Image (cartoon, rainbow, N blue to C red; front, side):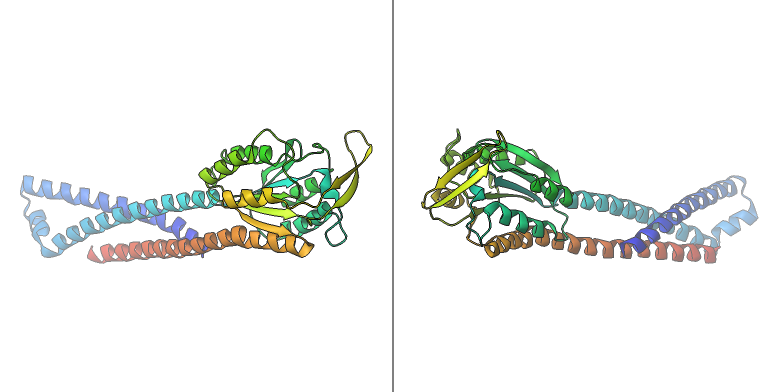
Length: 334
């Protein structure tokens, strides 16, 4: 409907302008004729000017011209409003900021017989396969933090970049607080209103310069909408990986401790916390994330677009129809 409304709008605007200037020209002509008739006191012109039919004609032309001016103003304001609404919709595009743990412990095979990292890649591929228009960014962290993909709508590029990630490339420890501080600063640089930070980690806070209490305070005060996925089973596990830094095989052990760091952060920062014990848990987490962000926002935008298209079509059609009626009305009065 918006295409039909645009077509009518493009046709109706020139017609409005033509009739408007035609009305102005007729009024100027009638005014000059009246002045000449009064100045030279021509009997024929005076009688024609004083005739009721001629007076009605001038009166109708005057009102028709005023109405055409109002229609021109209305269509111009409508066009400006449409441009503004399009800018607002672009600003409302969901921006999903994924903060992903790539410490060596992500290689532990305790989720359905697969490693945590393998399950994350598989489920993330399904998530990106949905027909959404979200802007997605991925930031990786371990001891250090690095941007893998800035905000982009090219989901194929995001997936291919994620598949090339090697565990341990950013260090052997987990600095959750430093990664969260950097992420908060990066999110503040984007004017988008619909921003979400998704933290996916399995480790404890065993490195970093910033205290988690300070991080929680920042996220709470800035009201950053955050989702936390705590990946892995809370039990003792051994793992091995090949370091991409020196090519050596390294071994590690994770003790059976309760990961309270992520839970405390979620509670104090008003984030949504989810424990991931299986691939289905991670799939459900990403599915809820999609419906609460991308699907919900796009549905709202589509509804607004449909309402705007109906209004656009009605106004454009009404303006063109009223203009044609005015033209016939004026022609009959001649």
